[in-house]
Length: 71
Image (tube, rainbow, N blue to C red):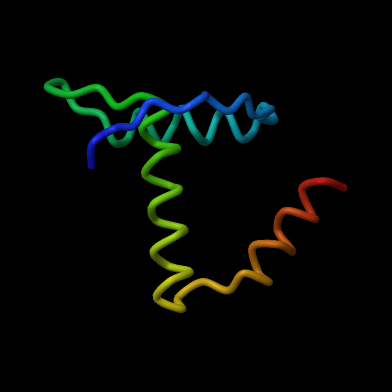
């Protein structure tokens, strides 16, 4: 998928979320190809959108998770 330059979103992450993001990037990386945190975020966005579209993920479930994180 070609990248479109858009204004970057500045998202505040908890230390736990940043650690998860770092761990995912590390797990996806290989000596031949390092995967950045931004690439992990792009993959996650695509995965969530696809699962919502295919009905494998419920929007209500995601909203509950977001609300729990805000508390």
